[in-house]
Amino acid sequence: MQASATTLGAPPAARGPVSLAAVLVLFVLMLQARLWAPYWSTHNVQAILTWDVMGYYLYLPARFIYHDLGRLAFSGDILREYSPTGSFYQAFQVPGAAAGQLVMKYPIGLALLWTPFFWLGHWAAGWQGYPQDGFSAPYQIAITCGGLLYALLGLGLLRRLLLHYFTDAVATVVLATLVLATNYLEYAVYDTAMPHNYLFTGYAGLLLLVRRWHLRPTRGVAFGIGLVLGLLVLIRPSEAVAAVLPVLWGVGGLAAARAKLALLRQRWPDVLLLMLGGVLGVLPQGLYWKWATGHWLFYSYGDQHFSFLRPHVWAVLFSFRKGWLIYSPLLALVLLGFGPLWRRHRGLAVPVLVYFILNLWVVSAWDIWWYGGSIGCRALVPSYAALALPWGAGVAWLLAPGRRRAWPLVAGAAAVLFTDLNIFQHWQYQRSIIHPEEMNRAYYFAVFNKTMPTPADYAKLDEAHTGLPRDARYYHARSLGKLNFDQAPPDEATGISAAQGYFSRQSYFSTGAHPYGPALTVALGAAGVWPGDYVRASCRVFSDYGAWGDKLVLTVERDGKALAWYGVRLQNPASVPRSWDNAYFDARVPADARPTDVLKVYVLNEGGAACFIDDVEAAVMEPLKP
Image 1 (cartoon, rainbow, N blue to C red):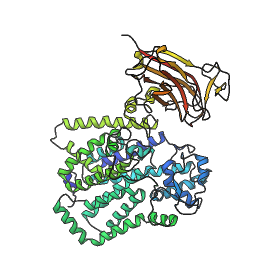
Image 2: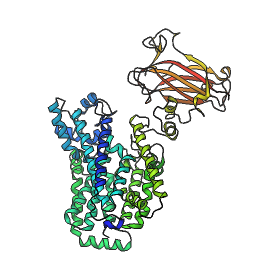
Image 3: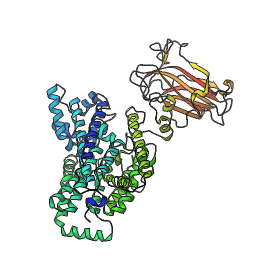
C-alpha cells in the first residue's frame, strides 16, 4: 500500500535541479505575461477585482474598511466609481430578513487567503495617496501578486510530489506542458484571482500530505489533510469530491482495500483528527451564514443548481463553446497516461481515476455548465494537480529505455504543436477573438490561427450559417442599393443627424428611441437576385465606446413575414471607438425564395449603445468567371 519512489522509476529523494530551474523559469515567464496584460486599469470590467472575483473579495473591504458586512451600503459607490460588474449579483436579500439585509453569494475561502495581500494593498494605497476604498490600483496589484505567489507555491508543491514518483526529466516535462499547453495558464496568470489557481495549489498540498500519511501515519498530518480538505470546500463547496483521494489512496484491489480498512481502524484517532480538521476548515463559512441568515447551512447560489441525473459531459469535454479537450487538446494525451499508471501503480491510478470521473460528473452537472466567461472548461483546472500522476506516468512510459523512438518523437511533436496552439489561443482570448462565452464550431474555425479576422468571420459568432463558400476574392460585388441618409433633412424624430457622416454630410443616429433604422428594400426579381445567391449586407458604424447591443440585419420577406432573418452584432474585437468601422456579412438567399419576395437591410438597436450609421448597402456576390 505504500507508494515508493522507485515504483515508477524515480530515485528516492530525488533533488531535481532541472525541474527546480523549470519552475523558476516558468514563473518568470508568467510574470512577464502578467505585465504584458496587467488589467490594473481599475475603472473597467477587465480589472482584477471584477465580476465573480468581486463576490469572493467583498468580505474584506466590507469587514475591515466599511464595517458593513450585512448591508453592503458602500457597494453603490464602488459600482459608480469603478464599474466592476454589469449588475450587482454578488450578494442578495436574505429570505425572510429585514429589507436590505444581504448575504454573499460566494464562499469566504478566497477572502481568507487574500487577507495578507489585502492589508498590503491597503497600506500601499495610503502610502501612495490612492483611495483606501478596497478597489483602487494598489489593492488590484496586491491581489494579483498574491495569486502569482500562490501559483508559484502550487507548482513547487506539485514538483515535489512528482519527484517522489518520477525522474527529474519527467517532472520537468509535466510542469512545462501543464503551464504552457493547457488553460491553467489563463487562471495562474490572467484570471489569477479566480478560485481555480488556489484550488490547484490546495490539491497539490493535499496529495503531498496524503502520500506522507500513508508512508508514516501521524496525527498531525491527518489533521492537516482534514484542514486542507476543509479549505478546498471553503473556496468551492463542490470540491468535497477531493475526499475520495485520501479515502482510496493505495487501494488498488480488494486485498489493498481490506488492508486500508484495517489501517484506518488501527489509526482511528487520526481519522477523528482528519474530520476535526475538515470541520474547522469549513467553520468560517458556517459562522458567517449563521450571522447573516440565522442558519448554519445556507444555499447561496439562488436558482443555480446541479442536475446530477442530466450532466452535460459531452458538452464539457468536446463542445466548441467550452470543450475541455477542444481548448486544451494535450490533455487527451494526459488521459492516456492512466494506462501505464494502472499497470505500474494501481494504488495511485484508482483514487485519481475515481476522483477524475466523480469530479467530471459534478462539474458537468452544474446547470451553467459553461461556467461563464472562460477559455475551455475552467472548472477542471484544479484537477490538473491530481492528473499530474497519470501525466507523469505517460511521459515516463515514453522516455523508458528501449522504447521505440517513433513514440516519443510523435508525442513530442504533438506536445510542441499543442503548446503553440495553446499560447496562440490564449493570445486570441486576451484580444477577445476567442469569445469568453459564445463560441461555436463555425466561428472557431473561422478565426482559427488568425490574428486579424474579418467582419465576416466575426459574423459567425451570431449567425453560424453566414459566409461565402470560397474566399471573397473569387467574387464580384454587384451593388443592389445604398442608403447614405443625405436626401432627408436632419430630424430628431426620424433619427437623421448632421453630427457625423462617412464621406457624406449626414448619417442615421441609432438609439433605443429608434430601435429600427431605415431599411434598404430590394425586390429580388427586379434586382436579379435568385435563390441560392449570396448577398452581402454592410454598413458603416461610428460610436464613442462601442456599438454594444446593436445589430446589422438582413431579412428576406414575403407578405410581411420573414423567410430568413440574419442579425449580426455591430461591435466586435476589430471595432475602433470614434472611427467609422465597416460591418458586413454574407447570407444565402433561401432556396424557396420567389422573385416577388423582398430583401431588406437595416440596423436594429436592442436597447444598446447609441451609434451613427451610414452607407447601409446590399450587394449580390457574383462568382468570377475562371
